[in-house]
Structures are given as structure tokens and as C-alpha cells.
Image (cartoon, rainbow, N blue to C red):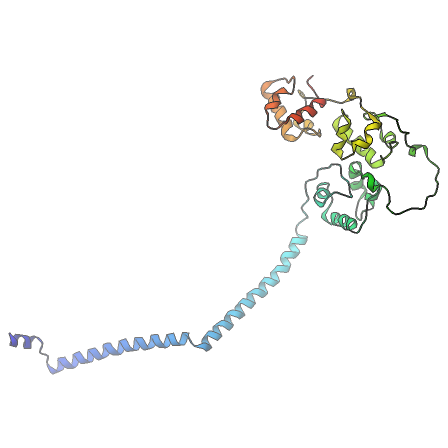
Length: 310
């Protein structure tokens, strides 16, 4: 048994020398790999190398930033000259230039720069004391003024100057004469000349009343003047109303476009009326629409004064 163990682990001199050489080579390879890895790791952590990498990175970032700065003025130039100013949807409605905000002015079709001029003028204490003053806005064209003037009204407290003025007697012209207290005129028949004879009503308010009366088809009660922001308490005593002269819309013949032109009927209500007529046939009253969500009880009451079913 001992001889067998000795024979198994016995190596000749040449074999032992080869084994030792192999072990030495393996050791050198492993050691060189470790040294190379350590040298690379030490090289990555070198302060000089890190500083060089940071400097290169900063130089690259500065270069990219300079390219972005060169592009930015071109973008701004394109934004200001390459695109037209977006216009707000135009919706003409009565307005007081001394109180209307910027959004309402934009909806009247005025450009943003003109709205800015109006607000700046008001911020400095300026006031529009008569309708014609609105025409003096810088940049206002004759066409713009002619479109907007029927919708302009000036509150009574803004029509008089706050500073005392030297009174110089002037001959009173017949057209400027005011009616005496107790005079009553028909609101549905009076023209602008007659309306201006009512104390407190000037050219702007007179045109506003006549313009709104034409849109409605006539007034059925004095309180409707509140729709155009007029104080009915001061005007109540001067007017009477004959509702028989109201122009009515035939609901069985009018189109959606015709119906929606009335101040009391919006697009969805006009569409509901026409759709009902197509499905159910001839209308004889507004009662079917009491169940529609597009109509409130107040809507149906005021619309009833302006429709017929002939």
C-alpha cells in the first residue's frame, strides 16, 4: 500500500521542473492582471484626469448653450412676424367704454394693442363722456367706429365733467330741448330724436335703445331695458309700451339661423325647436319645451312674447 502511494505521487525531475514552471506562469498572469486593473483604477481616480474631464464637459456645455442662444432669437422673430395675432371671436353687445374689461373689448373685435391703449387711458383718470369720444382712440378706423357706435352707452354719472366749468348761456336749439316732467312717450315708437328729449338720455343711449328694440322686435315691458344695463327706475315715468306692435317669429317656418338671431333664443334652443318640428310636425305652443333642459321657465316666458305658430 505505501509503495502504491509513493508510485502515484512520484514525479521525475523534469516533471517537477515543468510543474513549477507552469505554476510560475499562472502566478505571473494573475499578478499582471491585478497590477493592470489597479493601475487603471488609479488612473481613473487621478485628480488631473478628473479636472481635465470636467473642463472638457464644461466646454461642451458652453458650446451647446451658445447654439441654443443663436436659435432663440430666430424663434422669437418667427413668433412675432411669422404668425398673425389670434383674434378672439367677435360678439357685438352693448358696452360702456368706461367699465368694460379687456376680454369684452377683445370680443368686440378690437386688437390687443388698442385695448391696452384704452385701459392705459382709463388708468390715468381718463373718461369717455360721450359716444363720440370713443372715436378718438388712437388707431380707431371709421369702419370700426361705425360698427361699434350703436352699442356704446355711457353711464349717467360719467356724462358730466367733475371739474367746475364757466357757464356761458347758449341759445337752446329745438332738437336739444328736453321734455317737461309728466311727458310720456311710446317706447316702441320713439326714434332717437324723440328719445334724446328724455332727461338723462343722450345720443349713445338713444341709439342703444333703438338698436336693441330692433333686435328684439319690440319691447313688452320697461324692465327689458335692464338687458342693456339701463336704470329703469329713472326712465319708468317717461315711457308707455304698446305690445301689439311687437314683431313675432313664426316657429313653424323659421330656420335655426333665423331663430338664433333673437337675443332671447340661443343656438341650442333654436336647434331644439327645429328638430322637434321635424319629428313631431306643426307646433301650436311652447309647452312641449318645458321638459327640455335647454329651456328654463323664465326662457319660455320671455320667448312667448316674440313667437307665433301661424
